Image (cartoon, rainbow, N blue to C red):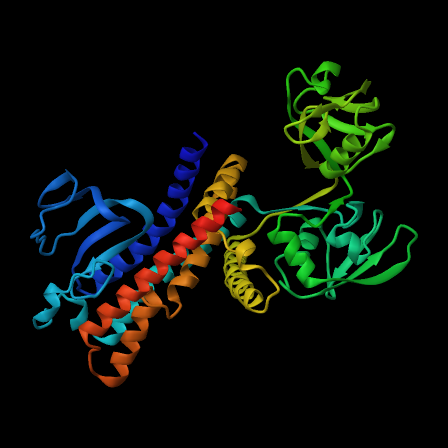
Length: 461
């Protein structure tokens, strides 16, 4: 069941992004007077489709099928992409029968370089527009919600932030000389911004002493890619029970799902990691536990129970973090929302190239940094559970990445086709069909190998 759910989540995300991408190619091709023979979501065997000649049909069409100016809209077996088959163009179908004759007015090869470049680039452009539209729409409809604190309540021992010198009670003032005004500013400044670079952090201690510390850039990247986390929590964070297991100590003392866990042995805690650590260290020793159910604070003594499946002592709760401190909400005008959408799209483009650069520089691990279909499916499922906005934000982020990858000058991708168009525009001569076919075949083979490698890497992780 879990495998089926992962597959469905992957298809949902990729289906939306691919459909928008191929729609860009399709609409601009039609606008430039080209025939689009096939509009396919997925690759390989045709599961079913529709065209004006045959109507709705299952399976492949006859080999000699000719729709003329009509398009066959189809869904194919392999959910790893899609394509628009444009008359007179060497593409994923490797069909070159029509290319031996003189160019027809409705064929790709009969058009001028500008029209060709426009059609090839339109898929990427539509992906950027999709991301821009999602970011702008969410900014306009939801505004900006921030955790209005920069004070640290907890630092996990051995974490990257602990090693840098951040301690509980510190107030973070700036990162790389950029002032921070919310916990979101801190999270962004230590993760997405200045990726791979060391961070110079100015803090004010609980004793009102200002100090400047440095966090190692590679260690920060490792913490992100290896899912260790930054190891810090904001002032105002609370630990809540997401679920309570039956026949376990927590249920026996009356703890319910949705309760807030306050303290153990009289000591407050501010992170799920800290809570688990205290439970594990005390093993079977009874613990005085305090929690809040609704508006009622309750207390009891609880004795951890050993769980051999995970080799540690537990009380039987699934915990999550909830911020209960001061918050700040800002609304955006339409113009401001559009600006936010543009900034977010540009940030994702920059983040893509920073990631690739960091991988080549050895600051980031390729294995840990690159995710494939399994990772996408897992993240999609998690985001979908949070709500439609989080799910759409994932689509926006992936749409930017796919757009940037597609426009790179790699054979079989849009950027590879664009290189041929530029060469033909400069030389005023068409690149031989045989050369295009060979390059296309090599490109497809390399992409399939890369897809296989990334998928295996996903499964190993």
